[in-house]
Figure (tube, rainbow, N blue to C red):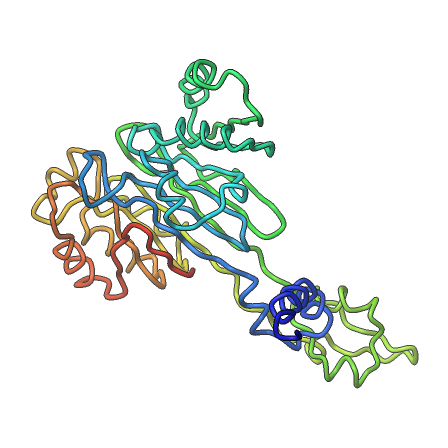
Length: 337
């Protein structure tokens, strides 16, 4: 009989883990699992459709809150394939208003309506998206079960466009054939980790723990000041992810994305097509790698591949010659930041 109760008991125990970790930090490995920061690639192709790639779309998963970046055709199908939950998606960020980055929006919005969604949906984009979508939504979705809020942003200067308790999203001004921005997802610094042995040694009351986690010293009833460094250890450094697509080679962005944990940069063409890249305001693989190298990022992910390439190995080889820690973006790829 007890064997059948194990899964239930395990699920019940998981409900208390955040409390356990907050109070004593005895389970740091479990805390790491809960503080998820992942990138899911839904599509990595450029404008022309192929049988190998979907148009551009990604999802950032931060502690099971989902943030979509761009929404090309078929994004909702890829969302399903990646086993992501529609109910956890509340924010969509559109880099620019070329169709291969936003043609999937109408279908996604309609599907959420069919599912009976009630939570608000927020869409951040350059100016113009609301005017484009509103007539189509009025025609195809007469009775919406939820509200959509459009948030337009300027593309010429970096701006904070979203913030919550654990994350900020800032625009990265890019240069394309129309107003375009990338996005910098930056995790906020986390409180220090409590050292349980020291807390017990100094008999620190439970009500003091939040103050100590946030950097305060502890003053004993006798007036002795116990330095915070003796009671805590620093938390892991905040993680950052930068998304840069579509853009001409733009070295000026390196300062804003300096040292990010993961950079996605478009690499539409190989170096032999550099004139075409310049003409269409796109980037070559080696140029993307130069951005990664000069910005001293930890890892580079390249994507937005031109339909001319049946095999992106040539792009990967060119990028790795400049920046070795480079990976190809592929559909259903999930990578930890």
